[in-house]
Length: 321
Image (cartoon, rainbow, N blue to C red; front, side):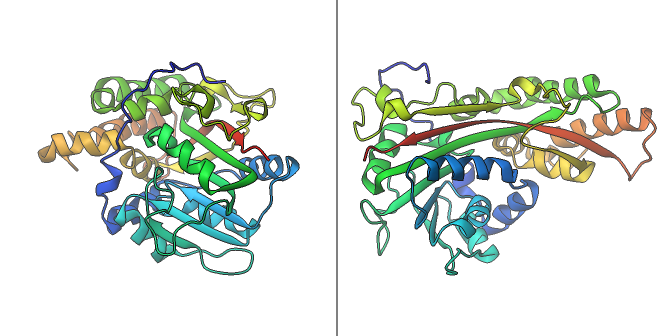
Protein backbone atom coordinates (compact mmCIF):
# COMPACT_ATOMS: atom_id res chain seq x y z
CA UNK A 1 0.00 0.00 0.00
CA UNK A 2 1.21 3.49 -0.71
CA UNK A 3 2.84 5.17 2.28
CA UNK A 4 1.38 8.66 2.14
CA UNK A 5 0.37 11.39 4.52
CA UNK A 6 -3.34 11.75 5.11
CA UNK A 7 -3.27 15.54 5.07
CA UNK A 8 -4.26 17.08 1.74
CA UNK A 9 -1.52 18.45 -0.51
CA UNK A 10 -1.89 20.67 -3.57
CA UNK A 11 -2.59 18.72 -6.74
CA UNK A 12 0.35 18.71 -9.18
CA UNK A 13 -1.43 20.62 -11.95
CA UNK A 14 -0.04 19.68 -15.37
CA UNK A 15 0.36 22.54 -17.83
CA UNK A 16 2.84 21.35 -20.45
CA UNK A 17 0.81 18.61 -22.15
CA UNK A 18 -2.44 20.57 -21.82
CA UNK A 19 -0.94 23.22 -24.07
CA UNK A 20 0.01 20.74 -26.80
CA UNK A 21 -1.14 21.40 -30.34
CA UNK A 22 -2.42 18.66 -32.65
CA UNK A 23 1.02 18.56 -34.29
CA UNK A 24 2.76 18.15 -30.92
CA UNK A 25 0.31 15.39 -30.04
CA UNK A 26 1.14 13.57 -33.28
CA UNK A 27 4.87 13.92 -32.58
CA UNK A 28 4.30 12.59 -29.05
CA UNK A 29 2.51 9.54 -30.48
CA UNK A 30 5.49 8.79 -32.73
CA UNK A 31 8.00 9.12 -29.89
CA UNK A 32 6.12 7.18 -27.22
CA UNK A 33 5.82 3.50 -28.06
CA UNK A 34 2.87 1.44 -26.85
CA UNK A 35 3.03 -0.83 -23.83
CA UNK A 36 3.97 -4.50 -23.89
CA UNK A 37 0.94 -6.74 -24.41
CA UNK A 38 1.81 -8.60 -21.21
CA UNK A 39 0.79 -5.66 -19.04
CA UNK A 40 -2.54 -5.48 -20.88
CA UNK A 41 -2.99 -9.22 -20.36
CA UNK A 42 -2.18 -8.87 -16.65
CA UNK A 43 -4.68 -6.02 -16.20
CA UNK A 44 -7.40 -7.73 -18.20
CA UNK A 45 -6.96 -11.12 -16.50
CA UNK A 46 -7.03 -9.60 -13.02
CA UNK A 47 -10.06 -7.48 -13.87
CA UNK A 48 -12.05 -10.41 -15.27
CA UNK A 49 -10.92 -12.94 -12.64
CA UNK A 50 -12.17 -10.62 -9.87
CA UNK A 51 -15.63 -10.31 -11.41
CA UNK A 52 -15.12 -7.39 -13.79
CA UNK A 53 -17.16 -7.17 -16.99
CA UNK A 54 -15.98 -6.12 -20.45
CA UNK A 55 -18.71 -3.82 -21.75
CA UNK A 56 -17.16 -0.42 -21.07
CA UNK A 57 -13.58 0.92 -20.92
CA UNK A 58 -12.73 4.47 -19.79
CA UNK A 59 -9.14 5.58 -20.45
CA UNK A 60 -8.00 8.72 -18.61
CA UNK A 61 -5.14 10.99 -19.62
CA UNK A 62 -5.28 9.18 -22.95
CA UNK A 63 -2.89 11.49 -24.81
CA UNK A 64 -2.93 10.53 -28.50
CA UNK A 65 -4.97 7.42 -27.65
CA UNK A 66 -2.33 4.69 -27.57
CA UNK A 67 -3.72 2.66 -24.66
CA UNK A 68 -7.33 3.12 -25.75
CA UNK A 69 -6.51 1.72 -29.19
CA UNK A 70 -4.53 -1.20 -27.80
CA UNK A 71 -7.08 -2.24 -25.14
CA UNK A 72 -10.33 -1.48 -26.99
CA UNK A 73 -10.48 -4.76 -28.95
CA UNK A 74 -11.25 -6.41 -25.59
CA UNK A 75 -14.22 -4.11 -24.81
CA UNK A 76 -17.55 -3.30 -26.44
CA UNK A 77 -17.38 0.48 -25.87
CA UNK A 78 -14.51 2.82 -25.11
CA UNK A 79 -14.37 6.46 -24.09
CA UNK A 80 -10.93 8.06 -23.87
CA UNK A 81 -10.42 11.41 -22.13
CA UNK A 82 -7.63 13.96 -21.97
CA UNK A 83 -7.60 17.63 -20.84
CA UNK A 84 -5.50 18.62 -23.87
CA UNK A 85 -7.39 19.65 -27.01
CA UNK A 86 -4.25 19.02 -29.06
CA UNK A 87 -3.87 15.48 -27.74
CA UNK A 88 -7.53 14.69 -28.43
CA UNK A 89 -7.24 16.11 -31.95
CA UNK A 90 -4.25 13.81 -32.54
CA UNK A 91 -6.11 10.83 -31.04
CA UNK A 92 -9.14 11.40 -33.25
CA UNK A 93 -6.91 11.60 -36.31
CA UNK A 94 -5.35 8.24 -35.43
CA UNK A 95 -8.74 6.69 -34.61
CA UNK A 96 -9.38 3.23 -33.17
CA UNK A 97 -12.22 0.75 -32.69
CA UNK A 98 -13.70 -1.57 -30.08
CA UNK A 99 -14.75 -5.22 -30.34
CA UNK A 100 -18.31 -4.22 -31.36
CA UNK A 101 -16.82 -2.79 -33.58
CA UNK A 102 -17.53 0.87 -32.95
CA UNK A 103 -15.24 3.91 -32.97
CA UNK A 104 -13.48 4.95 -29.80
CA UNK A 105 -15.01 8.15 -28.44
CA UNK A 106 -12.20 10.65 -27.78
CA UNK A 107 -13.24 13.67 -25.68
CA UNK A 108 -11.71 16.60 -23.78
CA UNK A 109 -12.24 16.08 -20.05
CA UNK A 110 -10.16 15.95 -16.88
CA UNK A 111 -9.55 13.10 -14.46
CA UNK A 112 -11.66 14.93 -11.90
CA UNK A 113 -14.60 15.45 -14.27
CA UNK A 114 -14.45 11.97 -15.83
CA UNK A 115 -16.78 13.03 -18.59
CA UNK A 116 -19.38 14.83 -16.46
CA UNK A 117 -18.82 17.89 -18.70
CA UNK A 118 -19.69 16.03 -21.91
CA UNK A 119 -22.91 15.68 -23.85
CA UNK A 120 -23.87 12.97 -23.33
CA UNK A 121 -21.89 12.63 -20.10
CA UNK A 122 -20.23 9.47 -18.85
CA UNK A 123 -23.13 7.95 -16.92
CA UNK A 124 -22.99 6.95 -13.29
CA UNK A 125 -22.28 3.24 -12.68
CA UNK A 126 -21.61 2.65 -16.39
CA UNK A 127 -17.90 1.79 -16.59
CA UNK A 128 -16.28 -1.62 -16.08
CA UNK A 129 -12.60 -0.66 -16.20
CA UNK A 130 -10.84 2.69 -15.79
CA UNK A 131 -7.26 2.87 -17.03
CA UNK A 132 -4.63 5.57 -16.59
CA UNK A 133 -1.19 4.96 -18.11
CA UNK A 134 1.66 7.22 -17.01
CA UNK A 135 -0.86 9.95 -16.25
CA UNK A 136 -2.09 9.64 -12.65
CA UNK A 137 0.78 11.73 -11.28
CA UNK A 138 -1.02 14.74 -12.80
CA UNK A 139 -4.39 13.96 -11.21
CA UNK A 140 -6.02 15.61 -8.22
CA UNK A 141 -6.35 12.20 -6.59
CA UNK A 142 -9.19 13.03 -4.14
CA UNK A 143 -11.22 14.39 -7.05
CA UNK A 144 -10.29 11.46 -9.28
CA UNK A 145 -11.19 8.78 -6.73
CA UNK A 146 -14.56 10.42 -6.03
CA UNK A 147 -15.34 10.61 -9.75
CA UNK A 148 -14.15 7.03 -10.33
CA UNK A 149 -16.44 5.78 -7.57
CA UNK A 150 -19.31 7.56 -9.29
CA UNK A 151 -18.84 6.20 -12.83
CA UNK A 152 -17.67 2.66 -12.04
CA UNK A 153 -20.09 -0.22 -11.86
CA UNK A 154 -20.08 -2.20 -8.61
CA UNK A 155 -17.19 -4.65 -8.94
CA UNK A 156 -15.48 -2.44 -11.53
CA UNK A 157 -11.72 -1.92 -11.54
CA UNK A 158 -9.22 0.92 -11.72
CA UNK A 159 -5.82 0.15 -13.29
CA UNK A 160 -3.13 2.81 -12.89
CA UNK A 161 0.39 2.21 -14.10
CA UNK A 162 3.60 3.90 -15.07
CA UNK A 163 6.75 2.74 -16.80
CA UNK A 164 10.23 3.95 -17.60
CA UNK A 165 12.44 3.04 -20.54
CA UNK A 166 15.39 5.03 -19.26
CA UNK A 167 17.43 1.90 -18.58
CA UNK A 168 20.15 0.65 -20.90
CA UNK A 169 20.14 -3.14 -21.19
CA UNK A 170 23.28 -4.53 -19.48
CA UNK A 171 24.13 -6.55 -22.61
CA UNK A 172 24.95 -3.32 -24.46
CA UNK A 173 28.62 -2.41 -24.91
CA UNK A 174 29.51 0.54 -22.67
CA UNK A 175 26.17 0.00 -20.88
CA UNK A 176 27.31 1.53 -17.59
CA UNK A 177 28.70 4.63 -19.31
CA UNK A 178 25.53 5.09 -21.37
CA UNK A 179 23.43 4.71 -18.23
CA UNK A 180 25.51 7.43 -16.60
CA UNK A 181 24.84 9.75 -19.56
CA UNK A 182 21.10 9.34 -19.01
CA UNK A 183 21.54 9.91 -15.27
CA UNK A 184 23.56 13.07 -15.91
CA UNK A 185 20.91 14.21 -18.42
CA UNK A 186 18.34 13.88 -15.64
CA UNK A 187 20.41 15.40 -12.81
CA UNK A 188 22.09 18.30 -14.60
CA UNK A 189 19.45 19.46 -17.06
CA UNK A 190 16.06 17.88 -16.43
CA UNK A 191 15.75 17.87 -12.63
CA UNK A 192 15.46 21.68 -12.32
CA UNK A 193 12.45 21.55 -14.65
CA UNK A 194 10.69 18.69 -12.87
CA UNK A 195 7.35 19.31 -11.17
CA UNK A 196 5.83 17.43 -8.20
CA UNK A 197 4.01 15.23 -10.71
CA UNK A 198 7.26 14.21 -12.39
CA UNK A 199 8.69 13.22 -9.01
CA UNK A 200 5.64 11.07 -8.19
CA UNK A 201 6.13 9.21 -11.47
CA UNK A 202 9.86 8.86 -10.89
CA UNK A 203 9.09 7.07 -7.61
CA UNK A 204 6.93 4.65 -9.62
CA UNK A 205 3.74 5.77 -7.82
CA UNK A 206 4.89 4.61 -4.39
CA UNK A 207 3.53 7.88 -2.95
CA UNK A 208 0.36 8.08 -5.04
CA UNK A 209 -2.62 8.50 -2.64
CA UNK A 210 -5.09 5.64 -2.55
CA UNK A 211 -8.80 6.22 -1.81
CA UNK A 212 -8.50 5.02 1.80
CA UNK A 213 -5.44 7.24 2.42
CA UNK A 214 -7.30 10.49 1.88
CA UNK A 215 -8.33 12.92 4.61
CA UNK A 216 -11.89 12.04 3.61
CA UNK A 217 -11.62 8.43 2.42
CA UNK A 218 -13.62 7.31 -0.61
CA UNK A 219 -15.40 4.39 1.00
CA UNK A 220 -16.65 2.78 -2.21
CA UNK A 221 -13.28 1.09 -2.81
CA UNK A 222 -12.17 -2.18 -1.22
CA UNK A 223 -8.79 -1.80 0.48
CA UNK A 224 -8.43 -5.56 0.93
CA UNK A 225 -8.55 -5.98 -2.88
CA UNK A 226 -5.63 -3.59 -3.45
CA UNK A 227 -2.96 -4.91 -5.82
CA UNK A 228 0.48 -3.51 -6.59
CA UNK A 229 2.87 -5.16 -9.02
CA UNK A 230 6.42 -4.02 -9.80
CA UNK A 231 8.49 -5.17 -12.76
CA UNK A 232 12.29 -4.85 -12.98
CA UNK A 233 12.48 -2.31 -10.19
CA UNK A 234 15.43 0.10 -10.49
CA UNK A 235 16.35 -1.45 -13.84
CA UNK A 236 17.23 -4.92 -12.58
CA UNK A 237 16.72 -7.71 -15.09
CA UNK A 238 15.21 -11.11 -14.37
CA UNK A 239 17.09 -14.43 -14.10
CA UNK A 240 16.74 -14.84 -17.87
CA UNK A 241 18.42 -11.48 -18.47
CA UNK A 242 15.20 -9.97 -19.77
CA UNK A 243 12.89 -7.13 -18.78
CA UNK A 244 9.37 -8.51 -18.26
CA UNK A 245 7.69 -5.52 -19.89
CA UNK A 246 9.92 -5.82 -22.88
CA UNK A 247 13.12 -4.42 -24.22
CA UNK A 248 13.30 -2.49 -27.42
CA UNK A 249 16.03 -1.91 -29.94
CA UNK A 250 15.86 1.78 -30.73
CA UNK A 251 17.69 3.83 -33.29
CA UNK A 252 19.36 7.00 -32.06
CA UNK A 253 16.68 8.94 -33.90
CA UNK A 254 13.97 7.18 -31.92
CA UNK A 255 15.84 7.77 -28.66
CA UNK A 256 15.97 11.45 -29.56
CA UNK A 257 12.23 11.58 -30.30
CA UNK A 258 11.49 9.73 -27.05
CA UNK A 259 13.53 12.16 -24.96
CA UNK A 260 11.78 15.07 -26.65
CA UNK A 261 8.40 13.86 -25.32
CA UNK A 262 9.49 14.19 -21.67
CA UNK A 263 7.67 17.17 -20.17
CA UNK A 264 10.73 18.64 -18.36
CA UNK A 265 12.50 18.70 -21.74
CA UNK A 266 9.65 20.80 -23.13
CA UNK A 267 10.05 23.17 -20.19
CA UNK A 268 13.85 23.28 -20.62
CA UNK A 269 13.39 24.23 -24.27
CA UNK A 270 10.88 26.91 -23.34
CA UNK A 271 13.52 28.35 -21.00
CA UNK A 272 16.29 28.10 -23.64
CA UNK A 273 14.59 28.89 -26.97
CA UNK A 274 17.82 29.95 -28.68
CA UNK A 275 19.43 26.55 -27.98
CA UNK A 276 16.63 24.37 -29.36
CA UNK A 277 17.86 22.19 -32.21
CA UNK A 278 21.47 23.39 -31.90
CA UNK A 279 24.48 21.55 -30.51
CA UNK A 280 23.59 23.21 -27.17
CA UNK A 281 20.17 21.52 -27.10
CA UNK A 282 19.98 19.24 -24.07
CA UNK A 283 18.62 16.31 -26.10
CA UNK A 284 21.17 16.77 -28.89
CA UNK A 285 23.97 16.78 -26.31
CA UNK A 286 22.80 13.55 -24.65
CA UNK A 287 22.24 11.75 -27.96
CA UNK A 288 25.64 12.90 -29.21
CA UNK A 289 27.35 11.43 -26.16
CA UNK A 290 25.48 8.14 -26.62
CA UNK A 291 26.53 8.07 -30.27
CA UNK A 292 30.19 8.52 -29.33
CA UNK A 293 30.06 5.51 -27.01
CA UNK A 294 28.37 3.38 -29.66
CA UNK A 295 30.99 4.37 -32.24
CA UNK A 296 33.70 3.55 -29.71
CA UNK A 297 32.15 0.07 -29.43
CA UNK A 298 32.33 -0.43 -33.18
CA UNK A 299 28.87 0.61 -34.42
CA UNK A 300 28.86 2.45 -37.73
CA UNK A 301 27.49 6.01 -37.91
CA UNK A 302 23.90 5.88 -39.10
CA UNK A 303 23.46 2.30 -37.87
CA UNK A 304 23.49 2.92 -34.11
CA UNK A 305 21.05 0.77 -32.12
CA UNK A 306 20.43 0.94 -28.37
CA UNK A 307 18.67 -1.83 -26.46
CA UNK A 308 16.61 -0.35 -23.64
CA UNK A 309 14.68 -2.11 -20.91
CA UNK A 310 11.33 -1.09 -19.50
CA UNK A 311 10.54 -1.05 -15.79
CA UNK A 312 6.99 -0.66 -14.55
CA UNK A 313 4.59 -0.45 -11.63
CA UNK A 314 0.88 -1.28 -11.70
CA UNK A 315 -1.81 -0.48 -9.13
CA UNK A 316 -5.28 -2.05 -9.30
CA UNK A 317 -8.23 -1.15 -7.09
CA UNK A 318 -11.76 -2.59 -7.03
CA UNK A 319 -15.05 -0.88 -6.34
CA UNK A 320 -17.14 -2.73 -3.79
CA UNK A 321 -20.00 -4.86 -5.06
